[in-house]
Image (cartoon, rainbow, N blue to C red):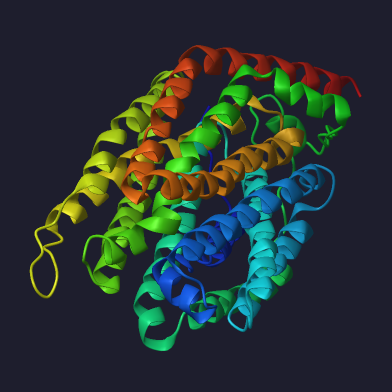
Length: 444
């Protein structure tokens, strides 16, 4: 099959969706650089800082958001994805804006919870749309571009918070990252139409171009069948342990390097941003490499995911256990910057490729639902991770807690390697299902 060509309106739509994801995800780490400042603002001590801000808010942000987005994922496969995506963006950005005006801890807590719903809901919608804009041969690369936008958003948001927060206060970054999406939402509403479901599938493409509509829709039977696909189950199982170590980066590492290792807040932010910058590059390059490897042999895709995740444990350990020589005014950041870059690059190779795997083993009418489930497992890890880490901090101290969290990537990597056998089998089953449906569409 010839490589897919895209119309200008499709390119515009996907670029706009990527840009909206960028600003939505920019909110994700805005608290981390100024965790101690926020704690002082609300009268918390250091333990309350880690538990109330690092643990509880992260828990409600990710877990409540993930649970609510199960419904959003199901609706993704039932109603207009365009209108639902617009709604989700507003659900995420309005409380993000209002966070800049929170006057007490309860307000901060619930505004972060609502923002988490918006961020979680955007993921199943985005990748459901991706599945109908791109064929199986290009989905890993497409996921890499979306991951680039999301990662860049996280990095820009954290960088902004790290450099603006100490100077102008922790509230201003929340306002600055929320405003652009209100304008982009209007553009999206006026100029974007969603793609037809199934139009990029080889078995269905010609029929849909002839005007025969793909009528597959999610129902309870189809939903239950998602749990019969082995690759889906493995993606879910690796998702929770795989996200726990990121709790160290998202919540604690910035403060850890500034409060425990003697670096300034700005330099600690730069170190964490190096991880974020490398993560952007790693996810993007990893998606492109995964796309090429998939077109050579499908099983190479999960092989790449598993190996890169296992290897990422090493530089992470070096980053956590680095002991600086105290030099006035602050320690030399060279080695932490190197360790952070290698860690961020290596462990993010998995992200776009796992998403491509899900797109390639699930039918067009179930992709919103599968990505909402994927997002839930991801959010459970992100939500419970900081809670577990904060408990470990109380028991063992920060350094030991962070080293334990790093070991969760070993479990994740091993589960990803099992998909070397399940992924090609599940993809072949999907192709057989779509051929059967194409034959039925011809008869009707």
